[in-house]
Structure formats: C-alpha cells, structure tokens
Length: 284
Image 1 (cartoon, rainbow, N blue to C red):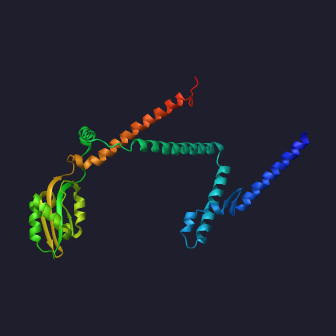
Image 2 (tube, rainbow, N blue to C red):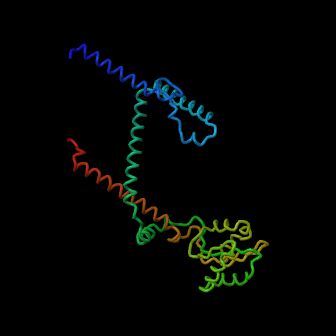
C-alpha cells in the first residue's frame, strides 16, 4: 500500500467515525449549551421529575442552575492562577482517594465486626479504670408508676398492690394493666429525672423538685384520675454514674477502640500481601 492510499483510507475512516459519533449525539435531545458542554434531556433527575405533577418550572430552574454552574466554572478556570487550580485539582484527587478507601475499609471492618460485642468483664474493667470520667450531669431515678382514670373501680386495691409490690402484687398489677392509662413497673432501670417530669405533663406541675429529691412515695389525685409513684433509688448530679446507666457509652467506646485496632491490622495485612505478591515494590 503506497503512502497516498494509506492517507486516503485513514481520512475516510476518521470521517466515518465522526459521522457515527454525530449520529449518536443527535439521538440525544439537547436542552442547553454552555461553551462546548451540553445538557441533555436524559441528564435530568428522572426520579425527581416522576414526583411532580407539573415539571416545567422545575426543568427550567434545573437548566438555569446547570448553566450558571458551567459558566462560573469556565470563568474560574480562565481567571484563577494555574497554581491555584493545580492545588484544587490535587485536593479533589485526595478527596476521591479518601472516599474510595473509606468505603472499602468500612466494608472490611463491618465484615470483621459482625460478631463483635464487648464482654461484660471488658465493660466492667473499663468502667473501673475510668470512674472519674463518669460523673453525672443530671439527677437519675429508679422508679415505678401507675396512672389511673378517675372512673376506674377498685383503685384502692391497685394502690395497695402497687406500694406493697410483692410477687403476688406484681402478678395482680400485670393482670389489670390494660385498665391503666399509663404505667411502668420496671424499677430496675435508671431514668433521667427531667424525663420523669415530662412523662406526666400537667401532673408534673404538681410534683415539686423537693418531692422527687426527698420522698420515695408520691400520690397525686386530680379530676382526671390518680398517679402513684414509688422511687426505689436516686443519684444526684456529680455523683458516680451507675455502670448500667453508662454501659451503652462504654460499649461504643470499646467498639471504636476495636475499629482502630482492626484498621491498623488491615493496613498491615494489605501492605504485607502486596509485597508478597510483588504488587508493591520499593526501590532503594
């Protein structure tokens, strides 16, 4: 094949490729153009459009926002110093790496942490070693309560069982619980005093802070009914936080420590494997 024939064939090939490219682009419906950049109909957010009864206003707004972004980007590239542009490009590249690496590591960590749960001894040991960091910044209570409607029969019987709270009393109260407006018989959990006050809305206005702080037995009656409260224990601000109350916090701390430990282990394993397979080589 002589040189002239080769040039002719190459030119024809390029023209055909160009025509094919133009045909493909002509299949798209352009909505707007800024410089050499086009916005096509298929670029619109279809999910958002599907939720609108009248999409015309949204589409026009979207096109204007796209155009403004493209125009400002072109002006920025034209006017900003090249060194500053290089710095931004590097930041973008670094951020891209961080996103990909984080997603990959998170998947590996999630897989390895599936069955991890801090043991009770770990929680207790951490609590004992960091007691001073677990000081209360609010009052806590252990209590049970029952709220009854004013038209309920046998309220005296319920009140007696509630404050006695022997095994047979607890069974009786559970059997009658559907008749209660509101109740909680689990007095082994620590709750915030402020949450107790919020729980009873208008009735809380009739409970003074001194009553919650000093009294263990509260009976409040109004036109709407009765409220019985029995406080089993209390902790005040600045006192040592009970271990059961801070247990979820300690579990999260231990989980985070485990994540850091595993992340370092993963980094080491990845490097060692890359060296072993000659994927990573260091030249002296």
